[in-house]
Length: 516
Ligand code: FAD
Image (cartoon, rainbow, N blue to C red):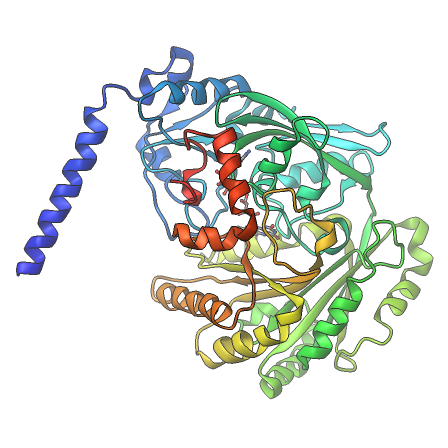
């Protein structure tokens, strides 16, 4: 009883502090200049939509949603916040496909990037197809599927993608934007020529490697900490029309990782012998939809392979082609797969359009939505692991933790990338290794399994720390300052300096939890 009483008193005390602080402030965002205040929404239904994200794990209550018509409005909002004794925080929100509140704020403002005029009237994507090389100018709130459609109309395409295309340009460029093309073209942040940014001081700045380069490097991979991306100029190349999409099954991890690293060693941007996409995944105790890629008649023998070995590793390999290369595509595939050590006869192939391939995850989304499995908790974990320690990771995590615990692993992706395709001046963090793997545990939970999966994520992180694997988190789920310092390593001082330079009042993207 004593404990319950103390708890109640503490809660009452905290509540009083919060209320005194919020209600006794003589100012609020509603005191902003009229044209700004008019664009604030406090409708409870809309507020509740902005208090959650794809992760469905963390909830935060914003004061209001800001729906700017123009970039100038965003600048004015930030400048107003700066004038206050305690500035309110501002979280730009693209598609809110974050996992743990990164695009949210408590008591601050969420900026709906899709409210901008260019998004609403469809003028936010402009293709410059006559330039050599061609590029596209895209507003920060645009989604990648729309960028794909707009560029394909000109026979062009961005070169580097994410697996899922219903993400905003500003959102993926704030992280890195990775997929099976990254080994060759680098992450999406390596394919940007120029940005327009509204900084945390409210200044609107155009930046590139040549102009205001400090801001350019800060914002790319900057987790929304230094500025709001309002336009990105993105490199384009000729668009193929079709894709040969292969999956090769392995029962031996070292053969699998050796072959994956061999495939990403053809990494010249213009190397016609190189694969166009290399990813990989595990097959273990997933539900039957994990086999939907394979012909029904082969599914029983794949299932017995999983039963026999516990974990099957899959290389996913793609080669694009079009009319001009149709005659030799089969020969190119033969050359690429020659000498690879997958389990004989366990190579499967699909032939799909380029767009079908890039937009493949949307089909999964539609299926999961129809089963009520999309708007559920997602305790995902994404790690970058140096290639030199990948077999320790396999032993310790895949065979140690995942296989031994009787909880569904979800989809686990694993594929390597070349560090030379990343620019270390940018804020994105990678391990100290020439080749490193991304490992993504893409889990779907319900309220019974959430706790167990989160505990498992912590065990995985702890094991990496204990055996000194030197991993970094991607889409980091970091809570303490100490962990942020470890995550950034030698870059920590640069990140601190960039914050002081571009957002000294710590206004932007508080949900990342780095400075707030
Ligand atoms: P939000 O969640 O809205 O925002 C993310 C962060 O960026 C927040 O801190 C926000 O404040 C900030 N931000 C948003 N817009 C801007 C802006 N214009 N300027 C500055 N900061 C901004 N990632 C990959 O790299 N590869 C993948 O293959 C991949 N697949 C995914 C598949 C699914 C189904 C999901 C849900 C996520 C996937 N992701 C992947 C992760 C994804 O890239 C990030 O979650 C990304 O942030 C999502 O973009 P968003 O528009 O939803 O960003």
